[in-house]
Amino acid sequence: MRMVILAALVCAFAGSVVGGVYAQSSTCKAQASEKKLAGAALNSFMKKCETDAHKACDTSAADRKLAGAAKASFTKKCVTDAVGG
Image 1: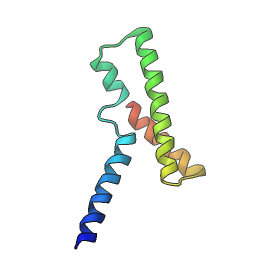
Image 2: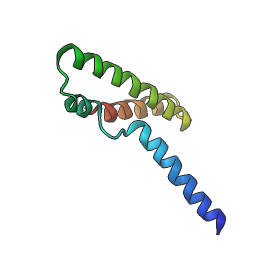
Image 3: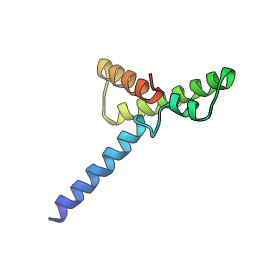
């Protein structure tokens, strides 16, 4: 019984960590909108946010041991979801 509970807790924790990497609480576009950014500030924020998302998605892909086309596809969708486009 203890092993079942432990396994469930580990799975729940792992799912929240992996999910949190590429499914941020809000997208880059939503954050920019909340901050009411425009012009150069918007461009700078979006570039940094996309770079951060790309790094997080690459890490997530490595954790999942993805390579080649699977990694590229996962990373592309992950970054798109994080940016909000």
